[in-house]
Amino acid sequence: MNTEKNLLLIFLNHIGSQVRLNVLDVREGIMSSEVQTAMENIIAKNVFVSDGGDLISVAGAQIVTRTVQDLITV
Image 1 (tube, rainbow, N blue to C red):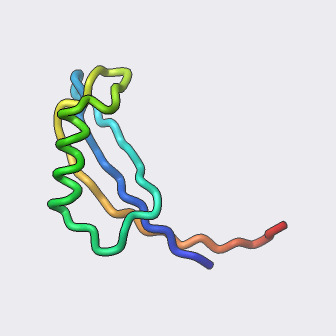
Image 2: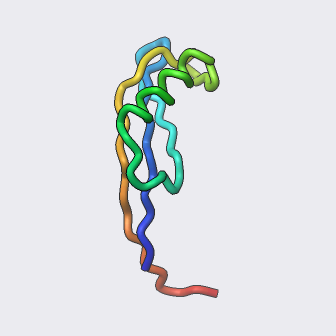
């Protein structure tokens, strides 16, 4: 059994739709200020474009933790 921690970044695009980016294996102890700065840089540098246009604002961020139990492994 293993536990995964991922960082979910939630942006709004030009038409007001949410755009979600999932960052796998987030660093333990990451600070909200680090995430905020990274998200603002992604927006400012226009790193990603969605079907609804450019990302224009930060809508939120979450750390998602899940436990995975393998039943059959090959």
